[in-house]
Length: 127
Image (cartoon, rainbow, N blue to C red; front, side, top):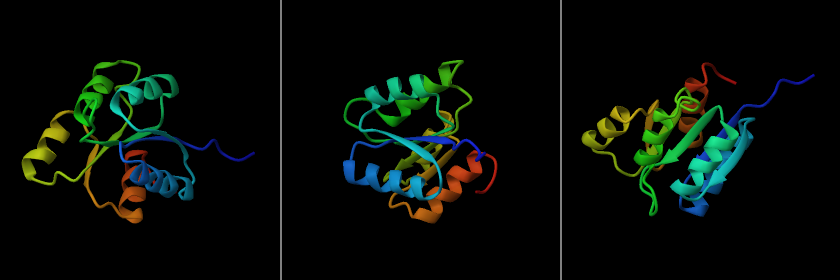
C-alpha cells in the first residue's frame, strides 16, 4: 500500500504561474488543488484542509496577507503551513508576511528547487 500523498493548495491569480507551481508540486509527488483568487481560496482551504498552502501575496480580490490572517485565526486551519510567494522583495514586505504568520516567504521568480525545498521543509522532511 502506497503512502497517502500530501495535499498542497496553490493560490495564484496568474493562471500560467499557478499552472507552473502546480506542475512543480505534481512532479514532487504532491496532490495539488489550484485557486486563482483569495476569496475562492478561502473556500478551497476550508473544505480541503491541505497539508500546505503556497500563497501569492498580490491578488485583485483579497490579498494573500488577508487570506493568511484568515487561516491563522481559524482554529481548524491555523496549523497549516503557508508559504508566501511574491514579487515584493523588500525587507519590510518579507517582515509583513512573516508577522502575518507565514511559515516561509519566497520571492518571484521561484525555481523548482526553491519551491520543492520550501514545501518539503514546512512539511517536516524531504521527499
